[in-house]
Amino acid sequence: MKKVIITGVTGQDGSHMADYLLKNVNHAVIGCERRLSVKNHRNIKHLLTNPNFSLIDLDVTDAQNIDRVIQKHKPNYFINFAANSFVGSSWEMPINHMQTNCMAVLHQLESIRKHCPECRYYNAGSSEEFGDVVKSPQTEEHPLRPRSPYGASKCAARHLVKVYRDSYDLYAIQGWLFNHEGTRRGSEFVTRKITQNVARIFKEYAVEESFEPLRLGNIEAKRDWSDAEDFVDGIWRMLNQEKHWTHAPWVRNKPQEYVLSSNETHSIKEFVEEAFNIAGFDRSLCRWEGSGKDTKYYHENDLLMEIDPQFYRPAEVDLLLGDSTRARKELRWEPKTSFIGLVDKMVRHDLNLIS
Image 1 (tube, rainbow, N blue to C red):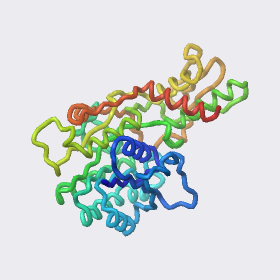
Image 2 (image 1 turned 90 degrees about the vertical axis):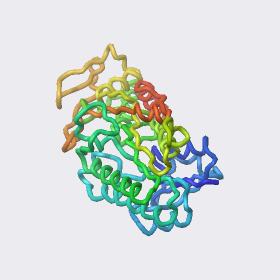
Image 3 (image 1 turned 45 degrees about the vertical axis):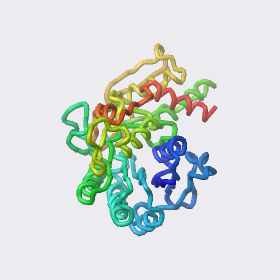
Image 4 (image 1 turned 120 degrees about the horizontal axis):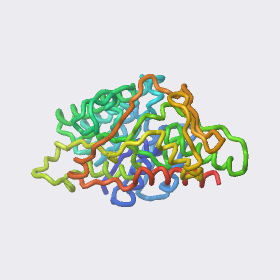
């Protein structure tokens, strides 16, 4: 049985990847998590009794630890989702972001080179690498112009992946994943912050309790949002390109890197409006007032959302819009969930959690 190592398996992407593989592929999945005194297995609790799933401790910033794990298991696939992925915190912890998002990738690639060069390697890239965009939509050819330490760390990792692919003939890739969300998203991310607070406000409003409004930063920022569950299928296709490749000849150790995106862009403001409407605040009774940092959103006379300047970033990325035409054509990949479907799924999930 082939082996797949997934780092960051307890997070959103890692847990969905494990679900996908255990459902669709007959491989042994080795999930890696940080050694913590208190474990968070909320996203993988249902997998712990699966005979094809095992869980090990791995500190991705520890080169010796990574080397031991790769030498011991000699995986056929190594999928790296372990990262500091909250962009806002990268200005406060830039060194930590570089160590986790870049140096860890170097340790992994070097160990794979030494111990199992036939292993197929995927590192999670980000649309934040495009940053200060020069044209829209963004394709695989768009220049890398990061606007945050997080984006810079992902760019650095991308260059390492390419160097190891070209220098050592490794099957090593890093896709560009535009914003992908879902019910397993952490509450520090803006989409989940919105849906959790919308659910809270609706429940408090329904029983005529006073409530604190949702507070956000730059709601005019536009992002290309998809469902994280759709993306894990695209990642697996990237790791097995010869099964989907529509051009000939396909060269094993010259794999392509792809953008995964919905090819639509929506503002955080739109996300807020849709979320409140889905929860039960009739859109026809809601209104926006003010502009910029004075923007507010009301339902009749009740304040639902206001701007808090502390949530603005030192440098903003105003627009991200992907073009996943190549992935759709060459990998035959398609996202299944619409923007409205994603918001609906997340809001209803969070309403059920507090019912």
